[in-house]
Amino acid sequence: MTALTLTRLFSADLAVDLGTANTLVYANGRGVVFNEPSIVAMNVKTGEVIAVGEQAKMMRGRTPRDIVAIRPLRDGAIADFKAAERLLSYCVQKAHNRKIMVHPRVVIAVPSGSTEVEKRAVLDAAHRAKASQVYLVEQPMMAALGAGLPITEPSASMVVDIGGGTTDMGVLSHAGNVYSQSIRVGGNAMDDAIIDHVKREHGLLIGERTAEMIKTEIGSALPLSEPATMPVKGRDLLSGLPKVVTVTDAEVRTCLQECVQVIVTAVRVALERIPPELSGDLTDRGILLTGGGAMLKNLDERLRRDAGLPICLADDPLSSVVTGTGQMLRDFKLLRRISVN
Image (cartoon, rainbow, N blue to C red; front, side):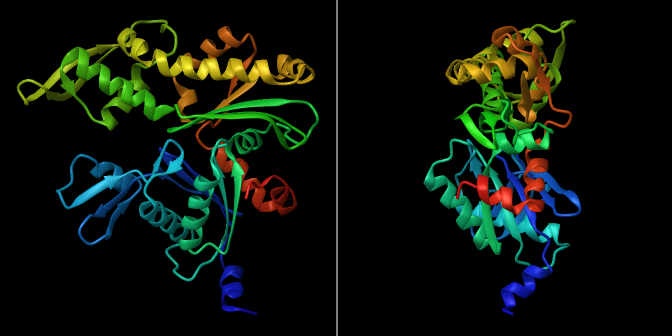
């Protein structure tokens, strides 16, 4: 028995939702053991990792010049290979209580529209993070599985997973994708739209964390039942001094409309392209929404109005993908059938 085989015997198999905004890790037999922002803080001179996850997020915009807090992924794909490797290594070690000699089998969920080059980058980063075997699976199918949809049945199920960098949608039947699409619009694009709006309309410079708070607190896809406002702190572009402005839900909704419309249009295109026999299934079952972006207020109602189908938000939209991916750790026969590498 080789040393690699011995170390794998004592390594828990892991499922990973490697997201642009957050990374979640599911350990076989233990459930979700890691759920933190996909951010790595590194010393640019030495290459040393200073912090990962929540600690690194707290450092964004507050570090000395030698330290940068970066997102290894952009639009669902690896943008910084070294940082992605460090993030995966950190996840593997934390899932194994900081043990160094671990070589788990790892299943990683990737966007359905990932290119071969993007898949290869994920595989290489995982192997360099000491994974013994790596399987790639598509996010829409894992989201459906994690939310409890019967993906192996002949009838159709449709899921729309709105993550930080991408929105992935799939129409599933017989454990396969009848239709899948990935668009590079998600929660991060919404945050950027808010940053641009506040800068343009209020002359105020804000960061990603503040934009995310605005989106979460008063962002919506349709008018709220009661108008809402929020005080926003930032730096005045003219004076350079700290300043506070009041932002309304109506203006935030307006600046989010372009992102929301892209998602709505993609859903309508998907419905137009699937076989008519499966359309009847969706009339009954509707569409399942997962991912952090699906929690935007009234987005489900907007899709219901435009698609003309029942829309259901997953019970735990943030962890649907990693929960479904975790189920693959107990069914390697199905995993080998649906893996995309």
